[in-house]
Image (cartoon, rainbow, N blue to C red; front, side, top):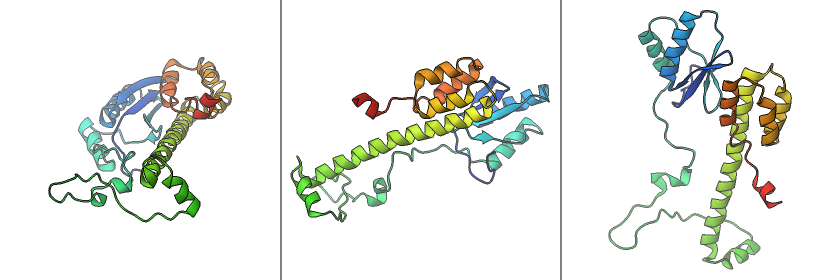
Length: 220
């Protein structure tokens, strides 16, 4: 379960009562619906997940609705999350040189030492635009490749985490997990087809990036 001492990022959450999706939305809204369902059906098995990461969320739903929301706010940070995934340290305002009067506008270019072997400098100097342009293109491509790999890995982890919690005892679980990590979409979808509809639907959303064909498969 989530450590209450750590801030919980805002976003979408999803609650399941058995195999059925009970609620989805911001954590406060989901918590109130879980509270109502628990009071109506005390023996119900309800699990709440972060809808993006599949981390299980635990909270105290005793007391009034106001008390539940107050405890939730105290235990977790619900402030909006800024987009930190696409910003590097070099993109921070401190690294951007200030503009100094009229003239050519500053483009946020930061001059820093780069140590390369002579053959590297020779190759870079022969590229269109020179060494600086070539280096920027190489860095941008590396960032793009890394982002794709990171998205695939995070999708695999979130999907497997949700599968383990909600479908670990269902037929075909192990084979579906192998298909997930092999990015075999057709086999994965065939294996989860007999599973409860709501579990299937959420799992297909989670596994979207994990099941995309890799660039290598396109080039073959």
